[in-house]
Amino acid sequence: MKVLITGIHGFVGSNMVRSLQKDYTIYGLDIVSDHLEGVKKIYAWNDLFSITDIDIIIHLAGKAHDVKNISLAKEYFEINTELTKKIYDWFLESSAQKFIFFSTVKAVADVVNDGFLTEDVDAKPVGPYGMSKRDAELYILSKKINQSAKQTYILRPTMIHGKGNKGNLNLLYEFVRKGIPWPLGAYENKRSFTSIDNLIFIIQNLIDHDIEGGVYQIADDDAISTRDLIAIISETLNKPTRIWDINKSLINFLALVGSKLNLPFNQERVKKLTENYIVSNEKIKKAIGIQKMPVATVEGLTKSIKSFIK
Image (tube, rainbow, N blue to C red; front, side, top):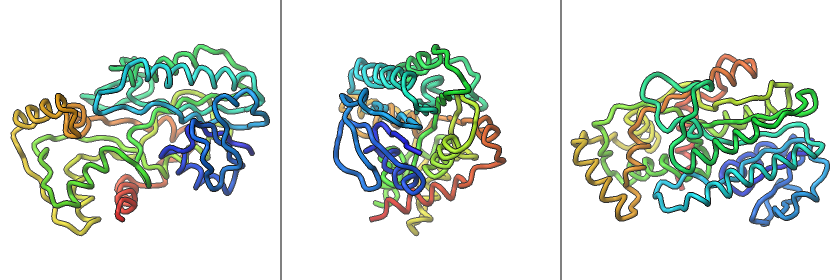
């Protein structure tokens, strides 16, 4: 089976190649043409309409959420929306049977204050990142296709972590590694994460089995608090857990200053690290036919943290 992965050089794409190359013939589509071990050929986007005989398309290419808020809004729509339209139109005309689009939970909800997020929530994206992903979703959903010949999957993962990940989990890791006390202990929150291993398990099932197309949220089984996450990192590094319960007003002031100065510690990052964002994964588990994900939340986080250790 021939699988085409867009954005193949990215964090998720490179992890997919390592896991999928033994079972499938992998092709890439990216702005970077550098060779990747396990990939038969990497095409440029200008070559898209010359590509033939692909069975599965995994569309990862996109502009990630910029926590520094310095990206232009039009960049999100040019990449996340228009590029998706381009490759989805190609998919509809091609012989490929399955299209797997990586959207985000932010396409429907910027915050989850109470309870947990499900696929049937009314979409209310905030900001160009979530809005551009939602526009891509709506374009895909507007197309009528023959379900017996083609299947389309829109995946909305929570924050994905694993080897090569660069994001807020790395920030937490650096705090603990350097012995810096975590200053956000005053915040009580729980968040859902997605292990790269669980994500790839889902992708393999979508490729290999006849699973109904549609919109699916992706997350590990259990949400976890930032305090507990700090404790997991500390235990993995064999360091004491150091958490400070600093007044929230002071933290918010420092985050405001960080936003104005484009520092890593800013309002957007504090929000991501302290908000509740619990996501249900029941729909995808039911579709695949499993009771729980193969990798437990703590197990996956511990594995990711160990991969950060040099």
